[in-house]
Image 1 (tube, one colour):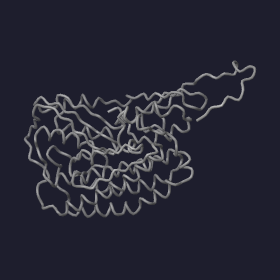
Image 2 (tube, rainbow, N blue to C red; image 1 turned 45 degrees about the horizontal axis):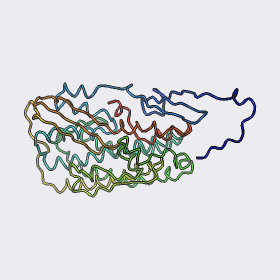
Image 3 (cartoon, rainbow, N blue to C red; image 1 turned 180 degrees about the vertical axis):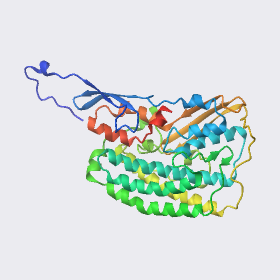
Image 4 (tube, helix red, strand yellow; image 1 turned 135 degrees about the vertical axis):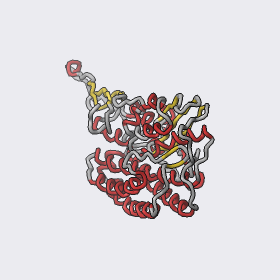
Length: 381
């Protein structure tokens, strides 16, 4: 962008403006929760931006240290409340790795299926809420209609709408209900049929294009410096997805298609999320088909009444809907971890705002913030 000074007349010094400090939040409807942004404005243009976090801090990592491995799953479930099942996975995978435990094959495929259904729920939330922040309310109703359809099968199997608590060290809480896989396939097929409605409604809308194209460009170098991951990183051309590049669960046997874009702007991030939704629906279908073909058998391992994880340390990371989620587990051989460090996707992703926002107008700040697809609990953990 080129700035041109046309002329400076008499009295220019007296008319000079001072920078203004503007606080967005911590209770602002465009901040997805209790996030505060401290902006320095030059007129209506952002000069500096500082994300200020910690208003929701619950001290999850310290609480992990005084809970046993069954109780930790409940705490881990909640930091990203849109990805409850995916949050649980890292904890159980880390504990199983130190125990040298292999969960039953049916549990592996069922976990993969539930992880992809959870990803669909997460993406539908942002695909509906992001246009809402730009002034379009209708896509939210379409997205929530589809969410309810997938939510119904998740609620049937676990009893929870957000906090599923269905993972256990060694497998899953209980077996799949009779006929549940058929209901999953029906829900996935219907959602796949209706996704184009959301796409046609918003993706090529002239107002949406004007508000998102070329706005909030995130470069490859910035992603590398800040450790940004997930759909936000892939929209800037970072071709990395743990499901394909360091596969876990049943992903080595699945054709995981990684969606990338090169523009790195708000529109590219929305496009990646929409395409990833379609990929997850296909993966869920493949998992359901495989589960039907597997013979009946156990869904979990029998555990002692008091589960103690052997001494050692490991790092288990998973491709959560919002990006890389990792748990560094250090055990001293007790029933509680000596240390369990959480690396959440939103924490890294949101730090890059201090470099993204300067130079943009305040009006574009809402468009950029919404396109970063974060959950504040995942930042503050």
